[in-house]
Length: 619
Image (cartoon, rainbow, N blue to C red; front, side, top):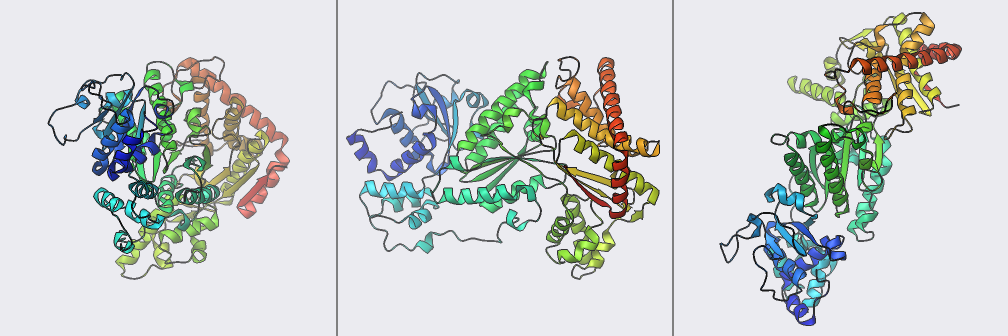
């Protein structure tokens, strides 16, 4: 590529406003590539707005040839190609319809969408980059080299938001003094975009990061900092219903960015799910995000992307290519000004470590169930503030196990009840739609308190958390499993990339509840099992992953992908025996420790019976 043009070519370029503007836009987008910095060989795919694509071709040809005529370029050796657009002066089909070839030096392909670029060319490309329309600063520079009147940045910004023909015309106009800036500002129609994170309750653990990135984006927009100084990747972890998907939407609205929403499952379900289909769908999502002037790319179910450290067998080639391509696309996208990636998962430990490293999804936030005050605020928000949060506490304090998604569902039902009676929402509407609650016998509450305290003491003894909180219900929703009568909250120190010691500690913590029951009452209840997601279910699955997927058992082996250890998984007798041994060993360890701590176990569980809430901190 030609970084400098000779005086004659530069003078000719300066007289062509459209070419100069797109030359600036191309250089800005490509300056971080090896092809631009070191003149490396390669195929470059550029995604350009349709109204700018022919101007981009003129500028790209200038960038590649320096303005020198090169008649020996034939269809296969031309440096610049346009894909999917009708030629202006000829019906001749070019190299875009030919087989993919490696260029002798460099080749640029221009397209209005990655959807129109064949999968083979996408995979062969060394760089896929979005070419944003010319910016206000490009317009200021163009008017200077054209020798027309200066323009202030505010007016240039308004001009840059117009269609291409208006931008080009006004850039070349001799004087803009009589131009009414108000006439260029696009009218806003409809209500403000909602929700914004600043208007949403909850999300306490992520608030500091959100405030920081909002300031960073504002500074970037004002050209006070480069995009590389902005935090651009975050992983949201936590149980279903805690608002991970809503976070991505609200973040985009807060920043004034577009939202591009997708999931790994959506990529896998494209056509027949073949590798090429999967990679093409993934590339399209990233290209969609980077083609915008500002976008939040929300990738749900990120755990399904896989982990190369656990891959073996027939799926290794497929999954290895998927992860490799995802890493490349993520790195490239985060380098593009205005692109932020939000990953969401219920199982962070199933994600490849390279995805979570610094420079990619480097910020990790665990979203738990809301506390009392947050729960009332979330419910009030979904009721459109028709009822004050303080007036909802008598209701929401009894819904300690409700997720934000549960509260939204209840709010919809309450608003429907108010519409049916043709009145404003009242407390009576909310109480009318609440599921019936059944009081729990004190003996049952006592056992639940012992069970949950057992979990807490094991977590504290394992050293995986510093602060643990427990909540126990006095009433249960009719039909709700008794296993949901208590809830333990804590954040593990090493959530994203746990070690063998961490995983065994998790198993021990999960078994601590039923071990505590046996220590105190001499018998065990069904509280640890009976349902998917129960203590025993989680402990068993984790043990199978530990020995059959992570290679952390007696043998260094891989038998099944960690994300495939579900109800359909049928383990070998050998694997089952090893898992039985791990569960038995960790249960014994939990029981021995709780026996030694029996006095503390009884005292804390008694406090929990009285207060229904307990907080334990590291001593």
